[in-house]
Length: 307
Image 1 (cartoon, rainbow, N blue to C red):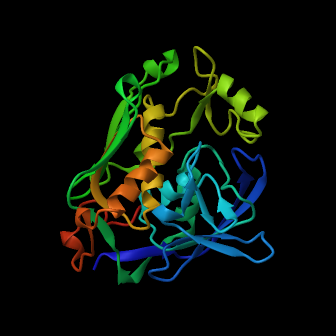
Image 2: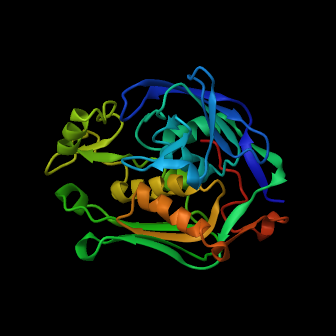
């Protein structure tokens, strides 16, 4: 049986929110089979659980936000991406503020936390959402057009193309494909950092956003170049971060996908719209398990190695 996974022990981190600048403590704890991933706002007078799902996403401006009633957690996509990359099915995320800490701006710190806690196999089959027919969403026309789609695939792969008119981005790869069956998430994707432009950061800070952002947790560019003294971690780090984000956004479905995802200039909002379009068509997907892990698509059966 291809089994569900959780953590062997709990692990903790402290950081600041990218947009709020608020100090936040994060505790990742094991959860029982079929729990899913649950964010718990432990700072509220009565703690509130927010179970991840495509329908729990209530805001996609600048990041993915999930809510239950008035309780919210912003910027969940990097942690969710790490969970997707390591195949974590069940997890409690205790959080003391309304934004997940940005840490180094990528998913690699979350990968480290999860792997240091250890990954445990559980006595229940891992459930996948297998896409049976193409589903696509689009926005805009002509040069402003952007789109995202899911198509049937015996595994999980993602391809993304960006289109930024900026010298520093133009000089890097703007399209990348990552297949979980042949690539390594921790090596190829997890270290890609979020990025922004100084003019946008100044504007966002004037609106009370990006208060925790800086050169230690983002790639920052002026009108011509990357300002980080250590440069880029990958020669195509910008588009790889978009793959990282997409993996986190799509994992908000609550189960891993068996599909090919492709996108052009997509973002958090379009990724969530794609999941909702999938769920709206019951003939477009099915939920499957693998009683014999040898029949599962390559890349899902082996536990991610600790580093």
